[in-house]
Amino acid sequence: AKEQNINKVFVPAGKYVVTSLLIPEFFTFEGVGRGTIFIQTNTATGDIIKFKQGACFSTVKGFKLQSTYDTTKPIRHGICMTDYVNEYGYFDSGNIVENIYISDVTGDGVYVGWSQRGCRLENIDITRCNKSGIRVHGSDNSITNCNVSVCKEPDIMNDWGGWNNRYIGCKGFHAGVDNTASNVSPETYMMRILGNYNHVFSDMQESVGGALRLQGSGNKIDLMIDACGKKSYKTGIETTVIKIDESSIGNNIRANIIDGTLNGYSKYMLDISNKAF
Image 1 (cartoon, helix red, strand yellow):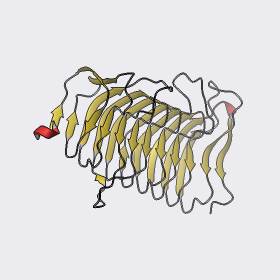
Image 2: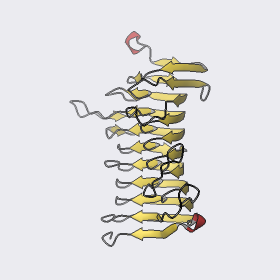
Image 3: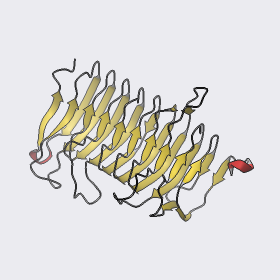
Image 4: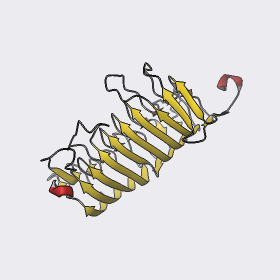
């Protein structure tokens, strides 16, 4: 479409079998929401939707994306906003992903590369990922009203390099399990912040592990936390609701913990490294 100078494609309701779709720059790709369904073939090796290198100010909205939860297959993200800086030092900026439903992927639900700046993720529902639901390496991005559940790694992962991102009205649920709950990891936190100067105002509910692991500085965090250490998945585990690692400096944390000891399995409400000043 881009080669024919078409800057917008609308996909009507229906089920479509795809391998991988590539989004160019200054492009809008739109469906009707849950009614426009992309089902990825089991033999596909790429992400369901991928922003091409150098893509900026493009929009993807209104789709349901479904792959095959098969850990023997290559890592495939639901949506990949790639890492790229061109020879002029330009970043991939201003991309938008909204009103998306993602399930059963072997990688992250949405991967935001470190070159992504000023992007917006809004109204995204993600479930059953072999990695994280949302993983952000880039900075100055906005993640709003996103619901993530049943991911093997942290539901929401602000990874290294992720600075000054805003997570507003997001919800995590049942992190640390696979889609059959046969594998559990009490060390998996629903949200993990590794960058600096991020802003979080979100809810975390019922995790096999804890609610938050903080490994950055200057972050402002406001969480509603409900239940950690879910006995129905594995007995005898000990978890920490909030864990602050060493060298985490100048963070502002406020947490409303409704039930931090579901079935009596949370070891600590708060664990602060003796090197965190």
